[in-house]
Length: 51
Image (cartoon, rainbow, N blue to C red):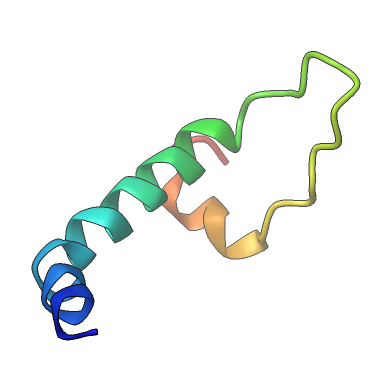
């Protein structure tokens, strides 16, 4: 448990930045196949340059 906590304290901000980057870059793309594309949160729009 301590090792996991230490790992999250060290790399947690990198993981959060990566998740934000993936969320912003995929928010403008449409789903190409029959897979479900969930609704995106409105708060994600403030990170986009396109309005």
